[in-house]
Every structure is written in C-alpha cells, then in structure tokens.
Image (tube, rainbow, N blue to C red; front, side, top):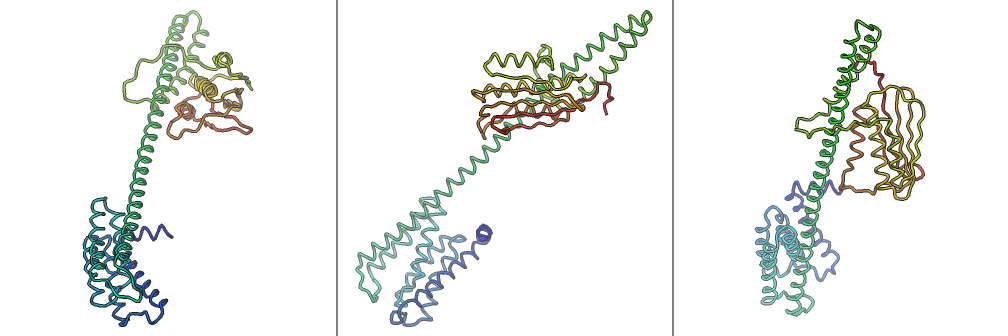
Length: 397
C-alpha cells in the first residue's frame, strides 16, 4: 500500500503536494481548537483563509520550486495585514527549505534557504509580532536560524542518501551485466572446447572407416565374410559419426578456433588412472563401478571422464581435508556418475562464474542427460549426472 501511494505521488506531484498543503491547513485548525479560546485569532474565518494562502506554496514545491519560494516570501506581508502569523506559514518555510535541500544540488539549496530565511530574520528584527508571550528579538532570530539549519541539514542528508542509493543501484546493474557476460563467455568457451573434442572424435571415426574400407576392399574376393564384417563395422561407425556430427554442429561457432590438441581423448578406461592421480595428489578417492559398460559412443565416454575429472579437481581445490568417492553405474540404457566428497565445498562467490560446472552442464545437456550439483546429506559436496546411452547401431533421427 505504501509503495502504491509513493508511486502515485511521483506520477502526480501537483495533486500529492496539494493534499499536503490541505493537511497543513487542517493541522493549524487542530492547533487552534486545542488552544484556549482567549488566544484564538480575532477574525477566525479570515485567519483560516490566510492560513490556506500561507500553505499554497507547498502545492508548487516540486512542479515549480522557485515560484513557490517567491510566493512563500511574499506571504510575509500577511502578519502585518492580519495582525496574526498563521502556523502554516512557518511550516511552509520549513517544508520548502527541506524540499530544495533534498532535491537540488548544494548551491541552489543554499540560495533557496537564504532567500527564505533572511527576510524572516529581518521581519522579526524590524517589526516583531506582538503576542501573549513576550519573546525577545534575539531569541526569535536565533530560533529561526536554528529551524532553517535543521530543515536544510535533514534535506541534505536525504539528498546524500538518495545519491548513494542511486550509485549502489548502478553498481548492482553493472555487476549483474558483468556476471551475465562472464556466464555467457564461460558457456561459449566450454562449447568451443566441446566442439574441438567432438571434432577429434569424428576425425577418429572417419579414420577408422577409411582403414576398414581399405581392408574390406583388399579381402573382398579372397574372404567375403571378413569383408562383410568390416562393412558392418563401417555401418555402425558411420551412424555414430553422424550423431557426433549433429552434436558438433549444435555447439560449433563461426569464430576461428586454434588447432585442436592432437592427443587422444580419454574415455572410461582413463578414469581409473585419473583416480590414482588424484590419490597421489593427496585426496583419498574410492572408485566403485556397478554394472558392465556396454558399447557406447566415444563422446559419451569422454563426457563421463570429464565429469569425474572436473568434480575431483574441484574437490582437490575446495574440499580441504576430506575423502571422495566415485560411483559409476551402467543399467537400463543409462550411465550414472556420482562424485561425493566430505569436505566443505566451494565457498559462495556471487561475482564469479564456475566455469567447470558450466562445462559439465553443457556436456551432459549435449547428450540429453541431467546434472545435479550441490551440498549432499551429511555434509560435503555432490556431483550427480545421468546420461542416456544410445546403441551404436541406432539410426539417428
């Protein structure tokens, strides 16, 4: 409700400030009613009319601030004509001083304060109002100076707070844009890396098909059965190659890439040696394999290897004194990978992007799988992935 009222006041400042001025007049009416009757103004209806006139500049404080200041100074003639100083007049001077200090820079704010309060001080010094209480001129001038100083100081404090809030919001927007750009860059970098590795897989398959085709041609007349077996292998390999090519086109980008690493890509057979390397680096790791891995595409095996590699690398970096376990499962046409550690996990860093997790997610999504990462029950960190394994003989859709 409060936010809605603030939004309405920002959209219609004249109407909102007009209601504010009416509220000042009602406040003076309440003040008069609470005052003993002998202190009421002699001409009450006229006094209320002048009170409304004294509050009128408040209605212009945001749409026309400088005319409002001039109108407020002009109302200083009211006490001389009425013989009574409306309370709204004093409140109007305070409100205008605060408004100029809160919404303008320092120089216009100081100028407005001087234009408002110097005439008040001169009026009190030259022609002080007579009232039921005898108040010295020096006291009146000092009281006005103190009121002006407090109103100006409060306005400047609000102005400074608004400025700092605006700066913080701008910094938050810049940080959000930077984080988004870093995330996009991380995804793009990992996709290019995956494309390079898939390029190697496809090149390997094509090389195998070339070798098998040459062998089949040489033994075709001498050993037709051997030639038929080679051709069947070429058929399966070509289908796997087509699937890898489809995935390669999904992640390939138009920008030039550096030459791919010519080293052979690791697979399931390399996980055991990877675990041994991590043990030697100081992290105790247990490896468990459930089921028997069947024939699978080299890209899927490479993805499983990369998930285990990235998860164990993160455990080495962030887990501290801990142990880790790697569980591989092969069942129901899926391969599951679960890497647990008992450490403290990576520290939260909202301004940084975890490229490794981004890369794992991209790899798993490429093969239609799912990935979950986060704290595990009982403490520590868990990386869990499930990837469907397509039979090598399946014709790609």
